[in-house]
Length: 301
Image (cartoon, rainbow, N blue to C red; front, side):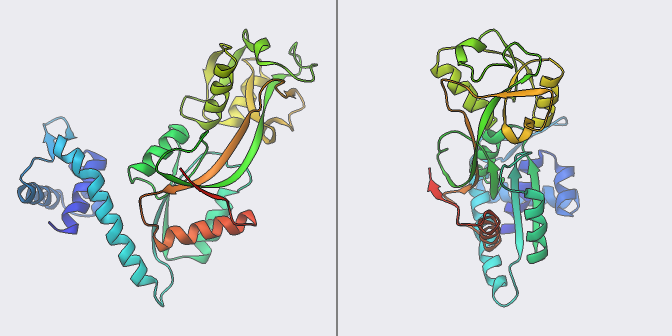
């Protein structure tokens, strides 16, 4: 078994398409197919179920996938550690992030990271399935680092806390609740809510609060962007729980605290607990600490 064979296997497993995998690897498709056949012969198993319409991982292929990622990660770390001696940090960092990270300007951070470490390639993924999806991608080895928001401490991750901001009930200025000083959750049972899809950290915080208060609520509109949610509230399509920094500058919106619950949206930077951090990942985390102006509190889940 060669590392090259595992690299080809990983590309096909992630793309589930030999043509796309060959383009990603810059290798002719026949070369990729030959490498997979060699690997299958060495292991004595079928790694992919192939038809004219689709490619899917077999049971053996699914079992090999996390092991292949671990082997390639270890090889990459060893290579980057040696290359860093006298030549500066090099390598690749796969980063996942939410669209908004309170207290940290992610584009500015990555711009500075690129200037200070031009030998490191950054591959960025914006969350499509929320923080839960980012945590899963970290656990499965698809990401090295993620900026995420999840209540509690997800198992298998090391978290560095970045910021915690309160969530406020946001209503149009003409809403009957707009004149209240605070609102108990029970008074919101009849409201229509605009919220993020399940899997997003702020959605989980609010869902837990309503469940703890034994109050049912109706989410009639799901969006994946805070600015969009604020706009929908402004146009009377519902109410929402949003961080103060999103809606506080809107003159036709009213922000209200909740009387009987403390709703906070916490952000962290996370790495897998079971994987050794590469020099490139350590350089990024050091820069995050510097941008935050202090060492971030590190907690293992």
